[in-house]
Length: 288
Length: 310
Ligand SMILES: Nc1ncnc2c1ncn2[C@@H]1O[C@H](COP(=O)(O)OP(=O)(O)OP(=O)(O)O)[C@@H](O)[C@H]1O
Ligand SMILES: [Mg+2]
Image (cartoon, each protein chain N blue to C red):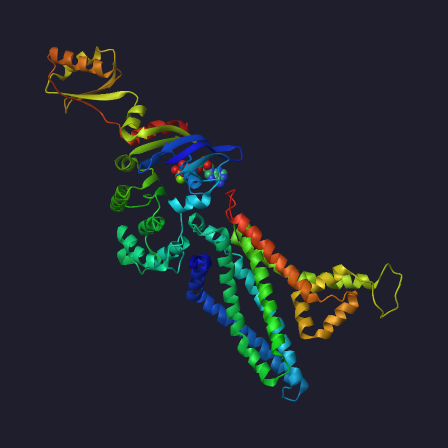
């Protein structure tokens, strides 16, 4: 019974990861980057207002900045941690031996995914002290913080799964890296671009203004979709619920965008993990 | 019992294995011989459930490698021809990881690991990082790893390559020990004298086809063409030469005057050879020794694989 839940790959990867100096320096680098951004923001902001003080509304702005920043950082780090999971073992010629053990493909893939995510969670937790500053000044509810953390987790798991999938189906880590970063940039930036393009096109319906300026525009589910799956847009709508209403007005769809996000990223995760598990022992016809 | 039936593996139009048929009994040590690219590693990979054949199947203890790979993995220990190790991992942690990968409980692993390290003579390297070990040590560690779940069948792809002569002797002793434990061992090697001493049976492969399978001696006999006979005389070398030159079965006579030795290729049967010796003695040729040169596996290998390079 105990064996069912133990995962040797996960345990070993965690051991290796926390032993490697690379991980420690990575963590330091992450924190330094975060502090520089926040420090920079603070100094610039207080200079602007000229008061030198920090009010709850301002601490909320800082909370937003940290949240979006962390999302961006984590999105950038995840492909680096996962895109080599299987392909690097192939390159180091350790994969063959691993595949002849009695571990199931599912166990191996999940172990790889969880060990990378564990490190990312560590990064997020290490960034928590920053939030304490925000809490000190008030203006942010714990519910908001928890919601944001859950969406970090979902995003990291989804992008991590994409990385593991590419790592399984490509031979070389470098190819897998490029593909995973490509997917990450698509989700993070290209979707925003598509949203703006779609939004502008919706505004000029065939050159004939059927609706008065400022009135409701024709609904466009696709434009709404691009916005809904964009992590940045999600962050903003969680932080500023008014923005969610704005999006609903713009696209005429009042469906909560976080549900679309949840479904879409869960689907990505499931599909990518399914493919990875299928393809891990690609040379065998029967595998699980 | 390992049974290979009609095993075929194609890479595109290239046939790496061609309807390979073989069966190997339990507890047998079976050596696979063949030139580079003959298909040895291909067979081993299929048996190790890493590669699926284009056609045919193989069973180990009645379980099919293609239909029931999970069951096969429980009973085989596999050592690939090329393998890597994880860096940042110590020898005992390395074994511990694979032990866990086979679902062996932690308490049992604690007992098992020192025993395995002892078996492969690596006790003093227990707390060393594996990527810093020498090649021979890694090889022995990998062998220990393949034994961790006490498999009945060992599939060892060139386990002795890259080892120095002493390490090779040690490897052979380990394998003998494993044989005495009743394990079935499939082993491929290019170093043939090594195989002939260690193996019960030899399988000869050439370009994906089974050329011969049997006991070491019978394989040697089977593949031996003409025999070469060496005769030593006390004196009268020229007379001896004149005598042997007359025999119709004899060709390619060579003389070594200083050693008083004549060697020649003989095509006759064993009975005819007896007759030849009797006649020589009756003709007062002072033969004091006659021996048939043993062809060792090395020669056999060269003979079989000649075609592959033409
Ligand atoms: N992935 C592959 N794609 C194409 N051809 C392959 C592949 N793997 C092996 N081959 C070919 O199959 C043949 C058999 O290879 P294999 O590795 O089984 O030989 P081997 O007997 O183990 O040789 P060696 O003594 O050099 O280890 C070779 O001609 C090789 O080129
Ligand atoms: Mg080989």
